[in-house]
Figure 1 (cartoon, rainbow, N blue to C red):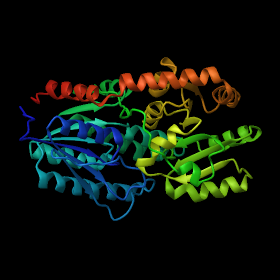
Figure 2 (figure 1 turned 45 degrees about the vertical axis):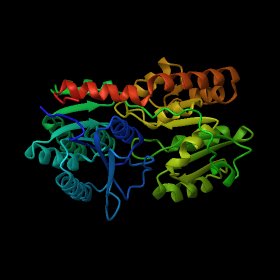
Figure 3 (figure 1 turned 45 degrees about the horizontal axis):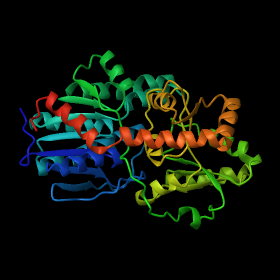
Amino acid sequence: MTNLSNHKKILILDHAGHTSQFDLALSLSKKNFNTLFSYTKKLSTPNALFQENEYLKIYPIELSKNFNKYNYLLRILDEITLGIKQSRLISLHKPDIVQSANNPLISQLIIIFYCKIKKITFINWITDLLGLGIYNTLKRKNIFLAYIVGNFFKKIEFICAKNSNWNITIANTFEKYLREKGIKNINSVLNWAPYKEEDKKISHFFSNNGFNDKKVILFSGTLGKKHSINILFDIAKIIESYEDYLLVVITNPEIVDSLRIRSKSDKLDNIKFFPFQPASDIYQIFKNSYVLLNILNSDSNFSVPSKVLSYIVAARPILLIMPEENEISQMVIKNNLGLVVDNKNIDQLKENLDLVLSDKILREKLIHNNKSYSKNHFQSYSKLDEFIAVYKKIGIEL
């Protein structure tokens, strides 16, 4: 039985350095638990606002270059390299528990078996079904590649779950899917974004870019294979007839130039593209936006866009262009936090966009509901209690 006390260490490892994962590490440290946090530098995705204290130490892992996302052979080599570096970090600091999220599958597999050899309790924190996602992406393009490469990554995902001491998923749909595959050592702790009281900090993003007199429809997040980029240009065309509205897209820096070229080619001057902004500014950028937008392909039921949770904390009207069956969509619909439309239904998209832009009563209701929901569901102490309950369940005495 592992005893997590002031003399024991728990390492929260998050490949991308996301806000929720760091929030858990910070919450553990505030309870005087000896906590380590590690993330990978040299990624284009924005990191959380990191801060150390007496009980929390942060150890970034350096990469010489960004990952090869879509060259699968080079990706495997990159993942092996990262897994070896993460194993060295574990060897150096000797935690008693490793809880790892958002890690590439082969990297995760390497550290799982390293922890197994060293008898370190390993918790597989599943924030995405990566193997299933790769399979579905390839299936749309090449069924042979899906069968070979996609099934390879699905198998790695299953082996990771099977060989972990415990699995925690951020969505009930993930847990259900894995239980159906025979994984029994599993439960869900639904994802969250750290709740914020009213923040008086001012972001100069709008004034610096000349947006102060505009009503901004904002998309912020990675644009990859699960996202229909065309829908953003469709929205820009829809709002051409609206005065004072602007679509702003904050996304992967490596694709910003190509998107700007396309908008110029399409003669659309009401859509602007920017690379990811500093984590210290992003909350205020959300707060100052008129509508917050998220998009997903129609077959992305097993993807949970955590960015929407940060939208809820910012308490702005939300428009989701993604499957209604998606767990995040269902949360938004059930709690009346925004409007949801499938990306193939352009007529309903126009209707919902018009509502969320111009219906004052609806907008006030959505803003109120988002404030209430985030205050009631996203408090760090309540999420910490859920994780502590899981630790106790698997024999970690606090």
